[in-house]
Every structure is written in structure tokens, then in C-alpha cells.
Image 1 (cartoon, rainbow, N blue to C red):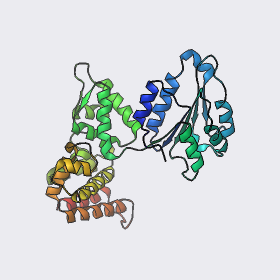
Image 2: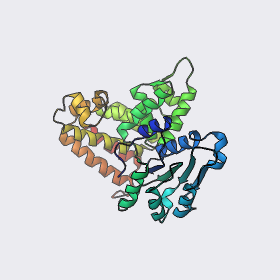
Image 3: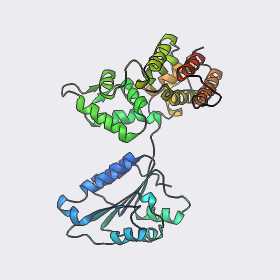
Image 4: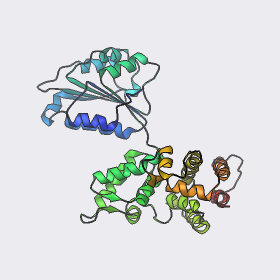
Length: 341
């Protein structure tokens, strides 16, 4: 539905070159990029002295489509553009007046529609075509697990710091794909770094984000991949005895994702070639598939299928299905034993 060539980077390149469109329809489940684009437009299109008369923020739950169109048709006052930002655009009921406006938008108006937690109804094809005709239709999607470490690395590199693979994976596993929360934590890390040492290490992650460099999901996965029974049980014991450090059930999605990808790796025509495997699993380099190369050495394809089934069973039991009273720690020990034996 969204224009395939439109990305966050392509939009930002146009904006910084001051090549503005009459319409930016920003939609999707990841609010981070929607906010970044809308905030840049709000802060950079107009001069501070121009904003009082030429910049307006509306909320879709408070206005009608006709009121938005009326505001969009105004001429700017002593400025080249007027900026109109509509937040909560998903709450607008009747979009017909907007569809008509999009077919002939005001060239001096920059209209930004922020449609979060979803996207335009694909059945409204005329509305979608009108948006694409008027300007930019951008879908902000949640990042996949494998995309988080590269995002973290780029964010910190842009901030003048460096980070090793283990540290970026620690942060990704701990915080997850909520980019607003993730970038907030990364900014905290950047501020903590001394001027003469801009390296983010596992120790920095532990100190600033509170993720133990020794007891975490990354270390548990590494112990399972290498079939290190002692280390795996040590980590499970730690989380069982320290529930405030995090729920051991936060590990289940991570383990499921790894073994699911490991199963996919077995179907790669050139699974012994790290570069081909990286392309098969849609990673940007062979560096990111070393865990899957190791996994295929230590687990047969049949065992991986059985592990995936077992993770689903434990997940169901953790939610009370066919499990009257087995505590969380015992369920996780059962899963770890099954994986390792």
C-alpha cells in the first residue's frame, strides 16, 4: 500500500534538502519514525518567528475531516509555507473531504497526517491513490529482532560512539523493538561515556541499562548453542532466585526466534557457506549467522523441530494451560534440560 520506494531515510534526505511535499501521510505500528519525521517538520520548516501564525497542530479525535481541509486551504502569513500537523489521524471518521483535498492540495501547505498503531484501510483505494498522488505515503514498521543490533550500532555511531556485537545484542535482547524506549536508553548510554573513551562495552551496558553482562538472554542463548550445561543452568538459577532482574519467560520469544531461524537455516541450499546463509536469513553480513552455523553443528534438524514444539508447550503451560501448579523456574529448567539433552 505504501509507496515502495519511500523510506525514512529517503524522506529525511528530501526534507533536509528542503524539498517539501504538500502531504506526508505517516502510518504504522512503529511510532518512532512517525514522530521523528513530524518533529523535524515542526522544528525546521518554518523560522521561529513564522510559527505563531503558520504552524498548527490538530488532533483527529477533536476535529472533522472538513475542518482539517479548511485549515489546509489557508494561505501562509508572511511565510512561504504553512505547516499543519494532524495527530491521531486514525480517529478521523469520514475521510471523503480529505480525499477530495488530496486530489488538489494547496502547494503552500505542508500537511502531516500522523496515523499510529495501524494503517489506512486498504479497501479505500481511492483514498490511498489520492494520498500517493498528493505526496508521501509512508508505513513505519516494527523492526525485526535481527534488525535491532544494526539499528543500535548506527544510532551510537551517529552519536560518535562505537559498540561491539555482544553489547549491541545485550541491549537488543533486554529492551526489545520499542524504538522510543530503545533510543532513550541509548541516549543515556551516550551521555555516560567519557570524552576520551566512546566505546560501549558489556560493562557499560550493565552499569547504564542494568543488564547483567553475565546473566542475560544473550548469554543463555550462547550457552544453549554451545551446549554448555553448567552455564545454562547457572543463568536459569540466577533468574529464578532474582525475579526482579527480569522474568525468565522473557527468554521464551528469544529462544523461539533463534530455533525458528535455525530451522530455516537447514533449508538453505548452501548452508555451509556463511555468506549464502546470511543472505538466506536476510542478515546483512556473515558475522550475524555464526550462531546458526554453530547451532547446525550441535543440533540436528529433527532436534530443532522437537525444541520448537517444546518451547510452544512450555509457553502454553506458563499461561496455565494443562499446568495446575508447576512454578516458572521448574518449567524453564524442564525446557533447558530438553534442549541440552
